[in-house]
Every structure is written in C-alpha cells, then in structure tokens.
Length: 276
Image (cartoon, rainbow, N blue to C red):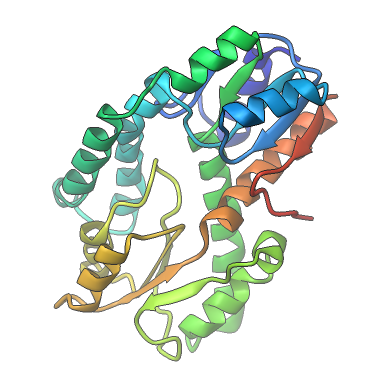
C-alpha cells in the first residue's frame, strides 16, 4: 500500500478532507510490512530495515513541516472550546501563550534530522498525529458521556476515572488516569474531553473551560507548572490527566485495525498499548 493511500485512509476515518499541519509523509513509497510506533529515532529505522520491514509509521511529528507547524494544529482546539461555551476571542487568548511556547521550542529543533536519515535509507516514513488524536478523542468521549449518563448526575470524578478504565487501552496501561487538580469524591459535573489539537493548551485553557461551567476537564497530559498554577487558581474545577500513551494508543489501534483489514502487515510497538 502506498503511503498516500495510508494517509487517505487515516483522513477518511477522522472525517478530514486535508492533511493537518502536524501530519506528513516524509519519504513516500509502497509499504507492505511496517513498524508502527508513537515515537521514533534513527535506531528504530535501522532496526526496521534489519528486521525486514519496508516502512515506519509514527504518531508524533518527526520533523519538517509537521514539527515546525505543530502550533498551528492547536487552533483546532477552538472547536472544542467554543462548543463548551467559551467565546472564540477568549478561547484564542487562552491558547496564545502555550501556542507561542510550542512554536518557539520547535523553531530551535533540528527539523531535518529524522527525515534525512529516512531518505538516506530510502525507507518509507510518515507520521499521523491529529487524525489519530481526533479519532481517539471521539472514541473516548462517546464512551465517557454515555456511561456518565447511565450513572446519573451523582457521578463523581472517581466514577469518571473508573469509566476510563473500562476502555482496554487504559486498563492495560501501566499508568492510570490521575486526578491532578480537585477532589476525586467531588461531582464530575459537565465533562469535556480535550484530547485533540497538537498538545495540551496549558492552564489558561483549563481555566477557560472552568469559567464556562465545565466541572471536569480531561487532557492527555499537563506540565507540572500548569498543574501547580491551577491548584492556586481562583477559578475552581477538576483536571484529570488521562495518560499519554494510553490515549494515543486508542487512536492508533483504531487506525491499525483498518490498515490491517486493507492488507498491511503491521507490528505495533514503542508505547502502543494493546486494545481490543
């Protein structure tokens, strides 16, 4: 299967019509047998070649435009923010600081390192980030909202973390969903699944949700400095960090199932937690 076809299948699954800013084919080509992983390095490309694989599919951006433009895909968080009731201007302002930090940090990085190695090896190489994250966000949110409705208005934050553990990737992961701000015994209230959109929006985005009636925000991850800021915030609410590898695995496993059904021989590794 050609890398272009793999990309199109991912876009179709996510309901996207264009390749997002954090997703890219670095070395195009035909793949019959690939390693699939969350992150990669030059050693992994060498291992893939030595073990007879003819392609590597990675989740996180590995360089080039996908790395340098990661901050742009964060604008897609505006959809989730405004859906939750945050005004667009307020949402943009909440994202601004974190977006600036992501842009500046990636500006310093060696954007051609991994793509250049893959080119030298003539190894088809690509990453699929936002499409998988969007699939994952939808899968998790549908499950969570349905189970919260069944549990009723008395559902607590602890109930919410237990509901996450009903999803196989979370149950199998060595990390567990963590209540990093707030009380597990508190009512969960309105829950927002804020997983897709490049990376987390930082403390300002969480506060924006809280100010507009969201009781509990779920993210993949959150920096310690942001967690400490939120614990001291005048705006009160709950933050659940669901777990980076478990979350990423939900979307990747969905894609892997479809690619296998289309004839690709795939070996998940490097942090992908088994699903169903």
